[in-house]
Amino acid sequence: MPNTIKTQDINSTVWNACDTFRGVIDPSQYKDYILVMLFLKYVSDVYSHKYKTYLDKYDNNKARAERAMAHERFNVPKNSHFDHLYENRNESNLGELIDIALADLEDANREKLTSQDGAGIFRNISFNSNNLGDKKQKNSRLKNLLQDFNDLDLNPAHLEAKDIIGDAYEYLIANFASDAGKKAGEFYTPSEVSTLLAKLTKYKSGARIYDPTCGSASLLIKAAKEVGSNDFSLYGQEANGSTWALAVMNMFLHGFDNASIRWGDTLRNPKHTEGDQLMKFDTVVANPPFSLDKWGSDDLKDDQYNRFYRGLPPKSKGDWAFILHMIESAYEDTGKVGVIVPHGVLFRGSAEGRIRKQVIEDNLLDAVVGLPANLFFGTGIPAAILIFNKGRDQKTDTLFIDASQEFESSKNQNKLKNEHIENIVATYQQFTNNELATGVDKEKFSYVATFKELEENEFNLNIPRYVDTFEEEEPVDMPAVKTEINKLQTELASVQEKMNMYLEKLDL
Image (cartoon, rainbow, N blue to C red; front, side):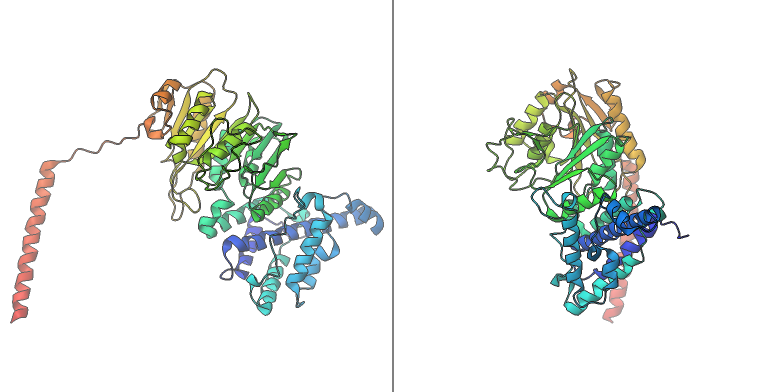
């Protein structure tokens, strides 16, 4: 009987396969080759497993087995199967064969693997690209890649757990993000931050969950897992075509076949609509691009969905454009919104200040959570989480949490540990349960502000205005300092005397 395949087996094998591309193309690009090949291998192995199961069931009757296979998750044409590509790994046009295989796989599963506009998830990648070197180098690299993946058994019967492929995919995306540096922020939110945001916006069973800037969909998946049941529906949109493709594959690898992940610019062209209105959701979460320039203000002055009636954000900073879209996408009276923002969103004036004032006056702001610096790939600046709640009733207080010191320091990037996440979430839950009085909750950590306080601060949400984190310096022992200075001066005089003596000897 084959050995059970564990998550670390897949992680190790696939991460080693990256050596094929290291030094040839940028990690933000070669991640696509690796993750597409993982998807193809998984789909092929599942298809083979199912086909064998039906052959056993129908006494090797191929016609009956093939009829049954027509109703499976994916139809894999013979030339699209990984095994076919591996058998032809020595062909001189291997890159072309892989591209044809992917195109045929798309055609055979058009409903699943293409966007509403007809674009397939593999359209932004070519294994026949000159980026992979000249013909000889390219064939050698692709042959090595197929060899690496051939050693990986993704037959569902051999896997340790049903989530193993999805977990491996997430692991790889996280590692690619670490390698990709600044570009990583375009497709990945660190796992611990996603977990925190998902817990802060947790919704009951039956939730409709939406991420308008979903990247590779890790945050959306985290939010789904917080529901605590399989009764939820997932929706996302992503502007970058390559990243949208990762998100679609990520959903299938996690078993979320019915997720609706659309490709396009959410602000200019939201794809999740019902009639001529925005679709509404129970939970809306996102990590939008920070302070996006040229986000579409000129095109959206007369927005058909009326998302910007509180004010049009400045054209050079799209933060509030995404926030307002999210608020308008949440169900009235019940919807919840959680968004990661740069700190400037909390206090910048002019158009943003007017929008912020209106949102607060509309009694939507539940909480402001300040995060530690250096949590995100590609930027060391600290960020914050804003929680908006459209079901606040008469409550007008707002919770402020300064979690800037809630982290574990690491060489390249700080991390939130479970205890940090739970501390933040527990405080927020106490607030939502009306268990916190106004004023200081936990010293130097949390504060419940009244609407009047926000108003007196001119709706500036800068966290230090509410959470006092001032640390008094220890009193200076002046006599001890004087004694230390005298000691140093004596030592310095002695050193100078010796230096003069040595210089005199050198002159002789």
